[in-house]
Amino acid sequence: MPAATFAIGLGVTAVLIAWGSLSRSAWGFIPIAVGYGVMQLVIVVSEARLQDSITGPARATITSVSGFFSEVFAIAVFAGFALGSLWFSMAILVAALTVPVLLTAFVVPLALPAPVNSVSAEATET
Image 1 (cartoon, rainbow, N blue to C red):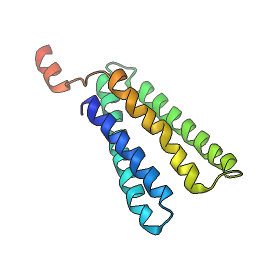
Image 2: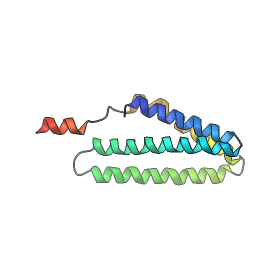
Image 3: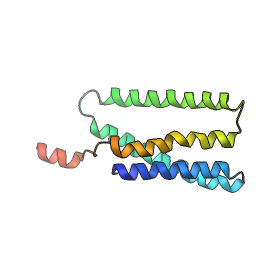
């Protein structure tokens, strides 16, 4: 998946989740669900790209560390929601959570290296 597709997926995710959370109706769950589905697609593809780009014995360690920091970030988000709920509604908090996702969408095309094509790399090595 090219970096531009990642960026578009993250941008669509942010817009759909924010729109659904701010709609203040039960129909808002549809764009939220689609947004989280798109985000899960981007996460799965990015994790696969990470594993594909790592060679050697460090592969398991790097993917484990990546998963660990993903979980640490999730706990930080939960703590932020708990603290933020003292001042803001859940709809505002969910919409605010899309801001980092949208900012990431702008950074991805600049920071994400091209995917490694493991099939062609294996063919040239033999």
